[in-house]
Length: 77
Image 1 (cartoon, helix red, strand yellow):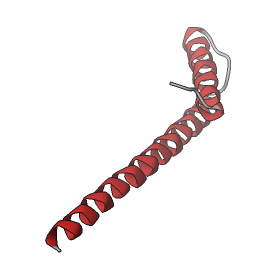
Image 2: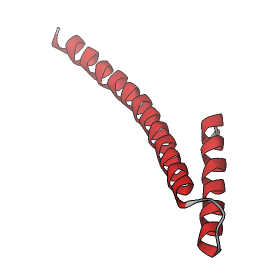
Image 3: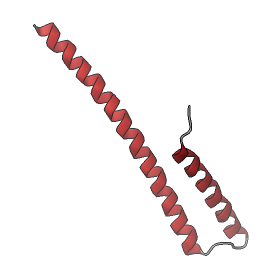
């Protein structure tokens, strides 16, 4: 499976946020508000990535259904 630049960016951002979260638990790094905002941005990025994947899947599914409809209309004639 080929990783695209969005996937790589989300992986790097997730690893950085996990590192900052671990530092915050062990004694502090970022302020709590900054950490929460970073987690929300990461969540937004993942949601955006998943919605793009579902849209591609939906387009493939609609193409497959239209193929079945064309086969059925040929069989009815």
